Length: 185
Image (cartoon, rainbow, N blue to C red; front, side, top):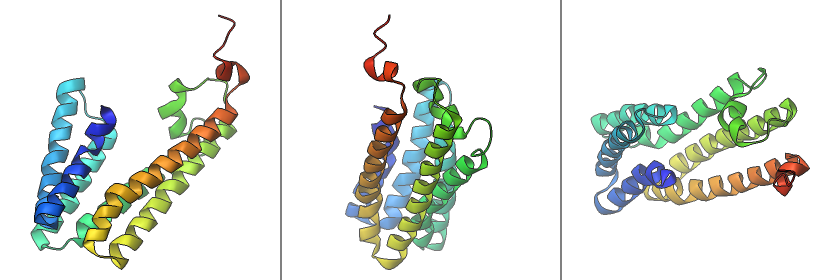
């Protein structure tokens, strides 16, 4: 359910683009992002940091797109978001607890070494920087229609492949007991 709600603004953006074009799609994206924030607040009593940041960027770059009637602003928004994510991960990379460890640590065994978390953190930094550059290439080298398709389908596919890669990396790093389901209990 969370995945659907997180992707709903992008899906609505895609549909609105296909029906009415980039400016209506941008308006729909702005409204959808605000509604997602409201839904998170209503459902959980708080709004996730990622939603705050994404919505702020959507409001800023979507607003600039509409004000100047220039789709370049909305096209660069994903790259800026990816760079911000990479910067946040990089900022904590050499600390005692990298950001990724804080975000995922409770879901994995505590015995994983710091070197593992730094490597995983580094993979995510590289992924976000790759996504930022790739988005800019598609935004500037191709039509808006291709960029919209890429934004929904291309980045989704790339993200799924990357997450599967991460699952393999994580599974190889898990202690044998965690892989076996800790049969001593």
